[in-house]
Image (cartoon, rainbow, N blue to C red; front, side, top):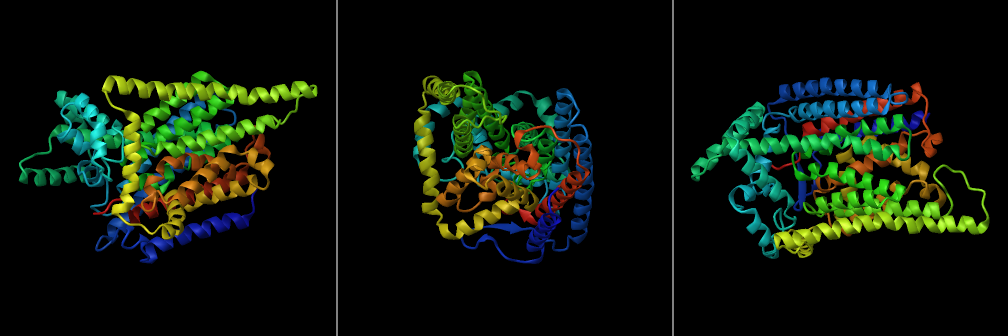
Length: 532
């Protein structure tokens, strides 16, 4: 049981964060450089009330399912636990739909149409639809396109997302009945946004086809599906260090993170699933010292890098965490806490075998990344390494065109992370750090926590994300939530043993979970992730 004072502090800080958004006009960012827009109610007070009621109903259903699932975590079979994970992902999908439709008219799911269609917000659909007639030629010329130095969406990303959009466009153009069916599923707010885009396009001699509408809506739903399905690898990641019921309780916070609902359907939210899978598979490969799982982790990492360089810090966090795990084992701190009774020579040989065996997953990952890069270079006649280098330089050049005051963003970015993840989750991260980082020996027992804090600190101080950090750091959120699991764990759970139900701990968890849902709804109803 944790102190009541800590819980009261978390609730008070959550209330302060909501009051800051709703009762002040302090800019959300740095004026003149980048700020997030507040949604103004202006004659929409009834809509705001209805939005809160809608969010409250959806949140109550979600928390009920999360609580029922927690009742089955200790004694449920693996199949049952898997079914509950799929179930909470499904209910989380519904929660995200409800909370995105809660803001006043003009700020709802209609954002999907505008964000994905217009090149100023995304650019992938627009280029795939109008400037990418032949994928093979597009890849052959991609390096030259990157060399042009565009510092926005096109120049800073590898070709993966463009190819995904192009494949969907071609497929739905060929299947008009399927396209019409998918387009018919769009909610009223999105359909109205499509009609407005179509009207604007007709003035320029173009039109928004049924297939176009279907592609944009399909990408929106696939992005949201990938987002909620990340709860599964998050649970499995947390399960490596805490009990099954604690891992479930931590994973239940996932769909309630405000940044997910605010920034859907941007690709930053799409990346949370492969980012979580990359971290889980790599740590599993390191733990099992497996070449095959290491190869799989390398393939997932490569697929991520084929779409975005955002996977570099994710991969670095996973790799550093695995190195710390090896260091712990090399020092003789076995995961089960039992020291073998052997001669000094035998013990030393066993310890030396640990870093040697670590090369198996490393080799597997290197073979996957190098092999896939070589295949793409030969088949597509595209030097992917040069593309990545151009992407990196183009991203750096962004700040030459759009000036940022780095020291100011050093102050603002951590606050953005607090609002993006929600105060209750950040409270759990802080509590986890407090109880696991009291000494160097304790730090070795929490390699993912140490790795996340170290890499995030370097990313923060580098100034590479001066502005829009709340959106750009979405791929890091699965690891952040995994780290937060330590704040829900009892002190006896450092060995990963199963725990029995604790009504007091359950009550605290339900209070924090409810508080997180309130913070999420209040943030989504007030903060716009995209400028109108």
